Amino acid sequence: MKDLLFILPGDEDLLERRLAPRKRLLNSALVSDISKLFKEVKASGDRAVIAATEKFDRIRVENIRVADAYIERCLNDLAPKFRRAVEKAINNIREVNEALMPPAFWQKEIRPGTIIGEKISPLDSVGLYIPARKGPLISTALMLVISAKVAGVKNIVVAMPPQADGKANRSTVAAASIAGAHRVVIGNGVALLAGMTFGTESIPEVAGMFGPGPAGIAAAMSVAFSYGKKAVVGIGPTDCAIIADESADPRWIAKNLMCEAEHGPDSSVLLATTSKMFAERVSKELSQLIPLVPEARRPILERVFGPDGMGAITVVQDIQNAIRTVDEYAPEHLLIACTKETEEIVLLRVHNAGEILIGHNTSFSAANYAIGITAVLPTNGFARAFSGITCRDMIKTSTIGGLSAEALGDLEETIRALGEEEGLPCHVDAAGTR
Image 1: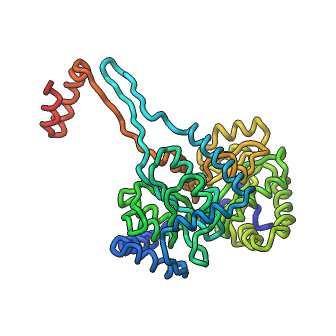
Image 2: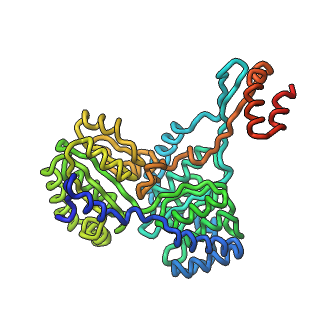
């Protein structure tokens, strides 16, 4: 694992080159191609979705909408142990989202006779995209569906690519149904998002779309946004960062880096530590642990931590430089595994991270599956500007304002002066009507 180690300052250029692919989520050519597919779906509906699935996924889909009978079979075939796990995860996710929901309505008199406030309303419908190419993402389905349910969304559509047999993944369908999804559709991911933008024979039009995926899905979200749909971009391949000191167990740190790396060969993982000895111990643990991983996932880890991957271990001068390194990286997931004193410094001063996990017991997998906090988070450095998806994304806010006659009179001179300067006489006249 000698290619992993970077000493900062000194190796900045090498580190930047290694992580450079992470910044290439969207480009104009990709967005242009996807815009064309959107227009095809708008014109031809289901037929265009089926054609795109056959062309790009090389899978023939007979029916875009998953039949109720198939959903029922998926539910009936669930193993009791798996169902219990799903139900516990649902309870935890619901509990977190209920804590995050803002009040449905509030008003406050901020000046005599002046009332301001907000009214919260759920989106009337959402489309939730659940990737499946690298394996089922049941946890993502649960997090998104429960977020929508807590927000009060009345029409929840789950969309996912088909398996090789042309059917939806049974575990994901069952989990989404238990969580409260109203419809499941399958097909090419971009075409499904286009379908939810305009509506087709099988796919209802929705107000908002959420979910992770590769560059094509992120680009499709941006195109949907251009058609007036609420969407969050910047959710592409997984990335994570760890800030750790010598109080951490190097094997546990290595396992957590591997946890996120195994999502796919385009995953990016970063460790920042002030101890070169600790960095070398983590690198050694990776060398020993990766060969023990089952064959299905081992090549992914070998790629991420190999010479052409985006895994990196950085040794920095002090904790402030560790924080600076992570803020520049802006990870999807950040784990702080340090002494309590250092943990408090990092938690206070770090700014760019989709989620922040604290302590020597809070593994990435615990957050991905069971704590209840969202793991649908901004990647590719988008954590500089975006947050993870929760119930708060599934709502919209109407601001409220009210004036007494006296309060209006107090504002009349201000309204008149600004209205006259902007050349809007009706604005001026409306202020004096009373």
